[in-house]
Amino acid sequence: MNLPEYKTLSEKKEYFVSYQIDDWESLKQIIDQYYEDSKEISIEDVSAPEEEVDYNILPTDSDSEAIQKIIIKDQERHAKRKTIPIFRGMHAAKYKLYTSSQRYWVKNSLSSKYSNIDEFIKKQIDFAKSYQNNLLENFYSAFNHKAYDLSILGFLQHYGAGTPILDWSHRFNSALFFAFDGLSSSYDDQEDGLEKYVSVYMIDLGKSHLNIPNLIAHINKSTSDIDAIIKKYKNLNPNHSSVTSKIEMLDYSYFSSLKLFYMPGYLEGGQKFLIEEIPDFEVIYNQHNLNIIAQKGCFMFNNSSDKPLEEMFLGPNNDWDLKKITCYNVHKNLETQVRQYLDKININKAFMFPEEEKIAKIALNKSL
Image (cartoon, rainbow, N blue to C red; front, side, top):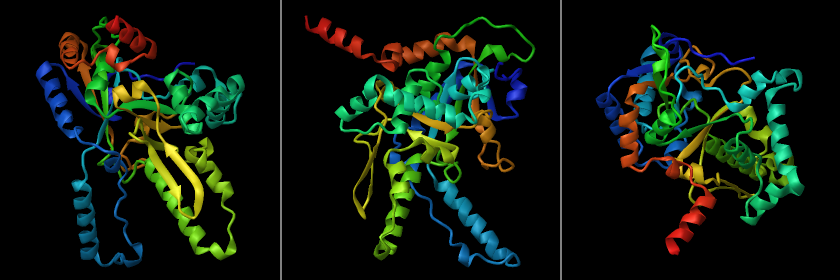
């Protein structure tokens, strides 16, 4: 069974804020815009907590003037947030934003084998951990790093297993590279022209911050809440192990319940989480992967078995209340100009896919 695809550009417009880019000047304007937007983005920008509203002091429905003031204040606060774009490039405009786990789930009819898609994903994680006498666990241990389920998931994604995460980048040029990488320039000259385009997608984490769950912010809140509860009920000696053990190993069952969230890629020094009342509790989140570092990569998690990512972003009438993803459909006839531009700034296969073996060989050759 095959996954559904878009048949026309008009159909795509129902799911995206869609732009058709047919000339180099238009594309260059977009490149320049996002270069400025993404120059200085930190994990603090992406994970900064929102000011919470005290619902105990909200006005009644009859106090329309006060309600209007709150709405205006919220809009102003939202407008002040930084633009924090992430991008994904795909070399065929017809493809929906499905994860690899969804592709395997549908194409291999795995619903007859597993009760749900999480069971399929968790089985891969557990097998990878135990393979060759826990080789991966020993590998991570050598770097003083636990083999978190989340880390194993990143490993599986890198090597083509079935995972619920999609690769994104904080850099537009990276997405543009992937949109034109391995491109087939042949296409049917159909009426709507879908086959003539590649696609670059953009999600603004800043403007959608209130709605898109963020893994770092979620772990921060969980550990903070646990710490507060332990302090409050310290005299009762509460048993916290059933909760903290899952967080401590970034267990799949702990974060999969979020259903949809953003997760950062490589963070210099990692992101550490502590619980003051549990001195030996420590979690350090990071993604150790040369490709992620080179590509300024990050991820979007979606463990739905059948909904592509864009169907989570359909505005206020959708369960998630997320504004539509922006889609730039770029004409394939711009391939030569795009490749010339990317070559000038050294965005190429050698840079985007650094290989340990190749680095060693180049180091040797340069030294002989």
